[in-house]
Image 1 (cartoon, helix red, strand yellow):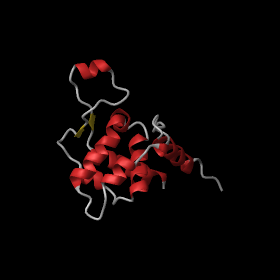
Image 2 (cartoon, helix red, strand yellow; image 1 turned 120 degrees about the vertical axis):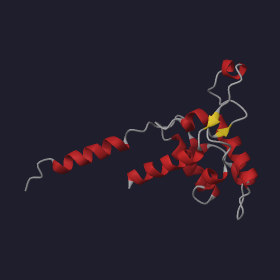
Image 3 (cartoon, helix red, strand yellow; image 1 turned 90 degrees about the horizontal axis):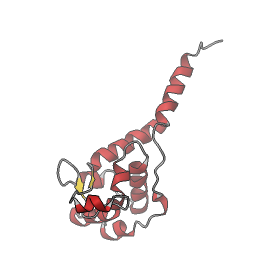
Image 4 (cartoon, helix red, strand yellow; image 1 turned 90 degrees about the vertical axis):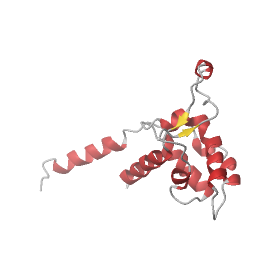
Length: 142
């Protein structure tokens, strides 16, 4: 019995979509998550402590996290949740500073000194959008 390639087209399309994201240049697996896990503790998860710790951890990688063509955001949130055993969406729901995202006090390691001289500020763009992108990417793998 021949399928005439009907199922093949769906398979290759799905595969293509799954492979669209690039690997993250930051190895989040081996980073030190102590800054978050030591300051953001349940059961209440105080927003001020949790968000401050999240920013301290994530801001150096803001450029990579904001790049939705990579797996950086989903990988970072996966490891944060793995090591901290946080409720899903904790940082996305608690850490908001405005419609643009979280303002980072320092530039990421990849930002140039000229950007700092110009007074521009690095942002972690809307963490809830990053979490949603991570959830969608994970769902596509199922």
